[in-house]
Image (cartoon, rainbow, N blue to C red; front, top):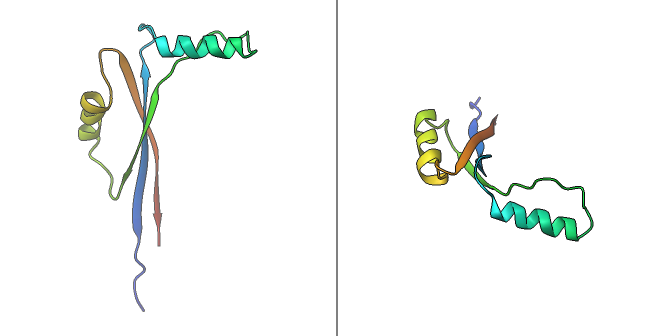
Length: 90
């Protein structure tokens, strides 16, 4: 009887958004366009980005945060948050 192969996969999303204290000109432009298209009650729009990363093993959390801070976001004007799921299946 053979042992089943277990595959580990972790998918993380790094959500990068402008800090609340920083003007978001792209968000303002989108808000204005949405209002012009008929949704006048839109108050605020913030535009950010999502970076999706898949791992074959659990990443080093300290190294991941360092990469998010130094490469994937600009810590002066942006905040980031890491969210994700882990799956193991035969």
